[in-house]
Amino acid sequence: MSAKFQYSDDIIQISTFAKAMSHPVRAYIMKKLSGMNACCYSGDIAAELKIGRSTLSQHLKELKYAGLIQGETEAPFIKYCINRENWEKAGHFCREFFGELPLKKEKIFELK
Image (cartoon, rainbow, N blue to C red):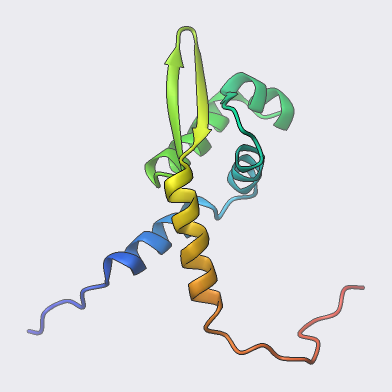
């Protein structure tokens, strides 16, 4: 029986970031936080997105697990900030990953 293929740490890291960003709510949260110089309270995000706090909590948990955000409790509130180091790393990985594709001049698809 052969040994399992071992993925590099970079491949594991980019797949973790990609999974965390794979839902529109999480992508929205990251876009919002990346454009802020301050943190944001979870209640404010829930109100803005018009989603339940438990649903938001699950999305924040995924982003936190991936290391893209960090939370800080200021009872009774939790504020979230972007983890700048990991966000920059995710950007680097994406630029490196997608930079490997040759650019084509023809249209890939057309919006109707």
